[in-house]
Amino acid sequence: MRDYMAEYKKWLESPYVDEKTKEELRAIEGNEEEIKERFLLDLEFGTAGLRGKIGAGTNRMNIYTVSQATQGLADFINSRGAEYAKRGVVIAYDVRRMSREFARITAQVLAANGIQVYLFDDIRPTPVLSFAVRYLGTASGIVITASHNPPEYNGYKVYWEKGSQITDDIAKPIEENIKKITDFGMIKKMDFDEAMSKGLIKIVGSEVDNAYFEKVLSLALCDDIDKNISIVYTPLHGTGGRFVRHVLDKRGFTNYFIVPEQENPDGEFPTVEYPNPEDLRAFNLALEYAKKRDADIILATDPDADRNAVMVKHNGEYVALNGNQTGALLIEYLLSQRKKKGILPRNGIIIKSIVTGDLGKLIAKTYGVETFETLTGFKNICGLENELEGKYSFQFGYEESIGYVTGDFVRDKDGVMMSMIISEMAAYYKKQGKTLIDVLESLYKTYGYYLEDNFSLVYEGLKGMEKIRRIMEVFRKRYPKEIGTLDLVKYIDYLERKVYDANGNVIGEVERHIPASNVLRFFLSDGSWYAIRPSGTEPKLKVYIYTVDKVKEEAKKKLSVIKDAILKIIAEA
Image (cartoon, rainbow, N blue to C red; front, side):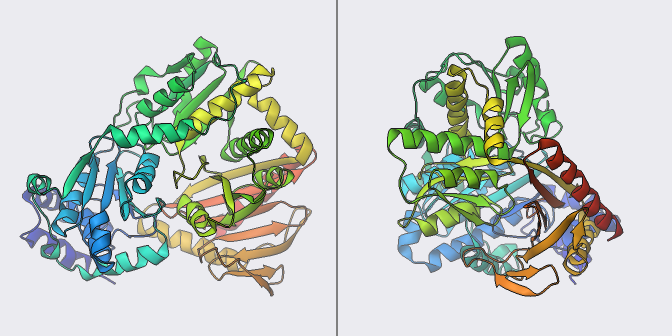
């Protein structure tokens, strides 16, 4: 175990650590628990890159941990040869505290390593970064964002040449490089203005935005829609405002309204407790305006505008759609419209995460479209899209945590694109006298009521990490073989990559394209199932419960029974 006090002293004595950072560290002198939290561990560079609280220390986001990660990436790029360095890296950043500073220091380190840098001139949505990698033909991309985390967090996400987030084959060598940097003096850094004058840093402006807008607008499928549909939209103080406004304007929607208090970018997110549109409290202000304006739908994007949430006016009430429901509606709309236009290919596929519900898969099958599953996260969804490219025609990718993408020009979830498509979809059905809830109900009547109860349990700090580890071990060893009237049929341990029967006998293996991951998934006799996994980016244990029944109330009862059983096991762990 690392000597965290020695690491703390090393930072205080380092000639490379600035005085302001040292002052922050001196302020916690004598607070051993805080020093331990900051210095026992390194901020882990996983396949999501870095994410953590902003502050001084090895387990925090700061200019030193960001520079160290960038040096590791630079060494990896240079190991690939001069062509990769010449193609370079495009960098985007969001509205958060320190995002601009982290982007600039990243550019300076890359430039010092002889790598061409393209730096956006201002904040951009994450999907625009993914697009820019492909559009500019760069070797890599970086976006400084912590997505929907609270304001004290920031992050550093790395993309590779096809525009998708890096997967293990790239992340692990970068991580090894980072570990070799034992002193900040090993990190190269060039003065920003010098790098600009040498042409090593180039500023990216509207050219990439305009190319992106053109591609997004090309996804429009139907003009037989009610363009006067009333839409309220909130960017939740994030990067989405200008971009969503542009695509709605160009698509011909005139009756939309942006929540004024949340329109301007602000990394403190002053009007929301938690800037995550999955949390319905984030809709409070938008809902007030929707009621005043009698809006048909409310749209929200998270701070880096890669995720969407939707509320729909139905029978005088505003009803929130969850990620599975929105995904199922989008699959029905996109595939039916493409079929109608004669552009739905025979080899079409959708890709979803293993913890996303099954309704979308059944709808896709009706249209002759195959479903592939992979691990949680769009790094895996779009990583699989890359792998299957040429063999299959990608139609849609999604996961239950309100992330969706279509087309082939963005290899990540895209809240801007989906704001346009969801608006078109709602306007199409409105012209037919239906709300999205009406359409969803008709899907349930056709395929069965696929319901869910997905929730997270927060376990902060080192003790929290230990609690999560214990819970996972308990479910591996003492999983329930029956819950209520439902029997366990099989379970999958994605860490071991094996499928087991109810008695723990191996009956199969996980598909080759799904990497090992600490996820357990239990399948019950009626088609219901549940899964548990630690979050890869937050101090949380995530639980997913799915039930199905021809009768809605029966599906609801099953949810309650399964949840009670799971929470009892967790409480005893």
